[in-house]
Image (tube, rainbow, N blue to C red; front, side, top):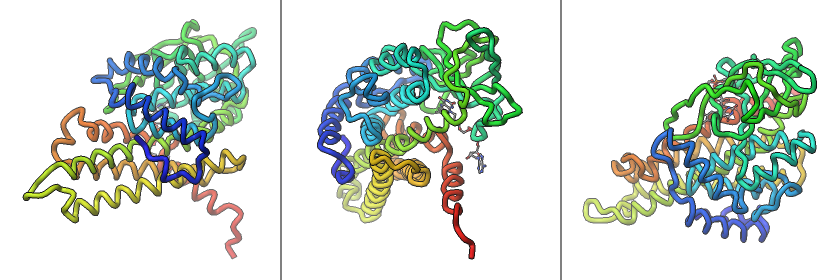
Length: 385
Ligand SMILES: Cc1cc2nc3c(=O)[nH]c(=O)nc-3n(C[C@H](O)[C@H](O)[C@H](O)COP(=O)(O)OP(=O)(O)OC[C@H]3O[C@@H](n4cnc5c(N)ncnc54)[C@H](O)[C@@H]3O)c2cc1C
């Protein structure tokens, strides 16, 4: 269970009470839920979605569409992801995708699009997906080639998206495509594609080190509805709104690793005493705790500022995402060292975390991209004299 005490100053009583209930729910329903294989990941993701639909998924959509057990603000989003990251990284990914796929609709969708999908997303009855990445367009999103042309009241898409979470199982996809390549990023629109739309193709799964429902999708004269002509901006607004929650998920995974390492160090005896009595092990535990607390402070500071209505949080969010995800990787690696060989056996909690945490440093803007963003902000409006 995560400790809200470390970031108490940023939380309200409502957050704390909801986090306690969520912690109990996660322990009972989701702890260590992880698919054995990639094939199983799709089925497990669907089951987890139904469980999270019991009051927690609504945290990923605005309160006017569904009420959550958790305050529906940035701190609430972080608390959900931290708890899920602690209990089941797959459940965290399922939750995150509901937010990523539905936020463009919440921010800019037509009322009919919102009514059709957002309450169903919150209840776990509709699975969302967000399709931006292409084989030739990763960090350089604006170089995407998927195209959209108007036809009658709708649009037709042509192209290929890769690394798409929930590919093949989502009920709808928010797809980014070029409407006018001459305009560069300003010529990228955002579109809604429902799973039954003619021309939507599932091109097969991509097998991950940590099982996750990832895959390729294609569009052949695929019918789509426009969400927004300024799709690039909408995509970036969506990522800006959710990126701090990636840092929170990293904190949850690191907290679980520290918990497992501490337990193991107290129980395991070598050279006649528990590992926890050796100073080299104590140093590792101490460094893990420092990294975790620093990550949580950066994360909840950014979320709190957002909830105070601060408009520009680019630096705070980039710092939190880069620091918390990199630190979580180090904390989990240290936990594996403290636990020794047993933590390398498949399906040990630390072994699962070791595989699961890796993608957090890559998706929703790599660490390098966060550093570039931060450096750009640092050098803005500075008089070199
Ligand atoms: C588990 C997982 C789930 C994902 N789910 C989705 C999804 O649902 N929808 C979706 O659209 N995408 C998804 N992605 C894709 C993800 O967003 C991309 O992997 C990410 O944007 C990075 O792109 P890339 O992998 O092509 O790496 P590249 O952009 O090719 O980068 C490779 C390396 O070069 C570095 N680099 C790139 N540009 C620069 C630069 N200017 N300066 C310095 N270094 C640079 C990067 O930091 C990285 O280290 C997912 C990825 C993963 C791993």
